Image 1 (cartoon, helix red, strand yellow):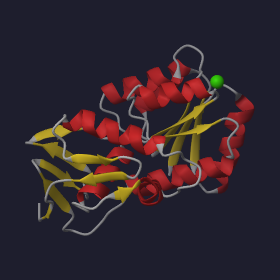
Image 2: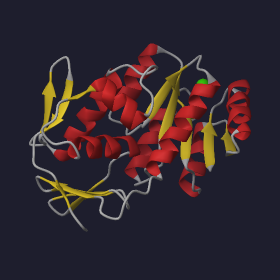
Image 3: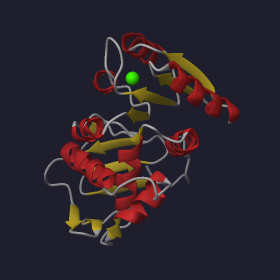
Image 4: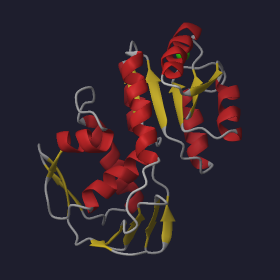
Length: 228
Ligand code: CA
């Protein structure tokens, strides 16, 4: 497993590096936004840990450019302030997760591992979900809508698959956090809402995801589990 860390504060970068290395994860460091962007574009990483406030090119811009270029490597943002959290969550950047400084390096590493495990997940041969013109291939992690390919982040894909696989059932936010993200304690339910909003934006207003106020979400279309 190889992770890119883009963080201009060297003590923080070093600390993250120590904890990742302890888990046997290979780490590459960039201390500047422009170098980070070029490195991310030029290499293959299982995940990118991205500081928001960076010299030359800031973290949100790096994320935007990677996604615009079709790079869907899972990204975890490190934010320093609450208004940065709002920017990261509000701009439909295609980030997979975030931590707020000061964060626990152990928790960050747990999230990296969870996200990489999910995006590498190989499930049974029959895992092909189809509903309402939307098709998910859980092995290749490709999504299409009416034959048109749609790019989801790792988290969006897993969240949509979780909902689609349970048609008609109201799923509470905590259940989504626990099963899609793999941890429920640290994250607020706002994270779930933002990711659902991004899925809706990508699928269009007709997406059969119903909001059950104060509870959670349900997938409102029959889903077929079929052979590709
Ligand atoms: Ca910084």
